Length: 111
Image (tube, rainbow, N blue to C red; front, side):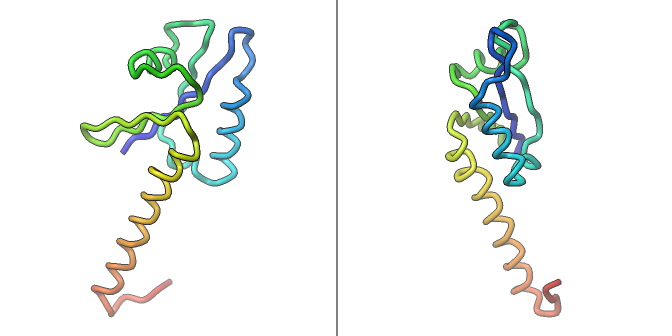
C-alpha cells in the first residue's frame, strides 16, 4: 500500500491552514510514518505535482490522501475517515496477525 498526502499552497504563497492542521495531526499522532509521499498542490502552478494528482482524480479539496493498494486507488478528502478506514484498520490487522502468530506458536513469548 502506498499513501500520498497532498497539501496545498494558496495563490498568495501561504500554506493552506487546513493542510497545516492535518499535517500537525499526522505528526502528533505518529501517523506520518504511514505516509509514503507528501506532495504539494501549488495554486500558482497548475503543473505542480499535487495539482496534477488532483486533476487526475477529480479532487477539488485539499488536503487529501491517495491510497494505492495494488490495482485499487482510494481517495480521502476527510482526515478522520482516512485514519479510521486505512490507518486504524491496518494497525488492527497487524496486531491481530501478531496475536495469531503467538497463539499458533506457544513456544514464543511476549517481549
